[in-house]
Length: 135
Image 1 (tube, rainbow, N blue to C red):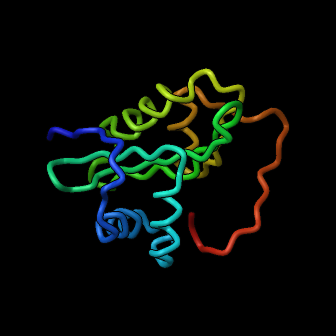
Image 2: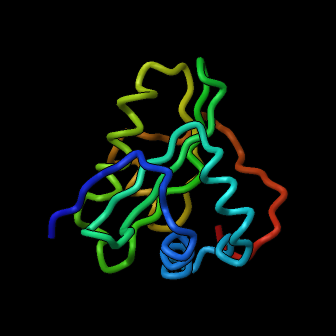
């Protein structure tokens, strides 16, 4: 397995939907909105095994102080192989000096993000208005 990290935005919608469906993310049910959201992100990193999209992560940011990482997905069969860390490593190349880096994590993702340096934000309470079943 040779996974390559890329900042290309030349990603076919069907590859994105396959990745999101494999991870059971409800945003796959809104393909046009998902595609536009990813393509309009401040930063978009993808991981490829030949022509198979095996991971993707995006960032939205004000460009100076704050960055938010809404999505990080890796194909289930590729999880645990360091691909998520590679994607976040590329994000850190751009955002490591930002005043605030934020994300929302649940389930097994909490341990992953703690391992790469994120921690609970003080006594904050996660809140949202959300129209989906899962992510």
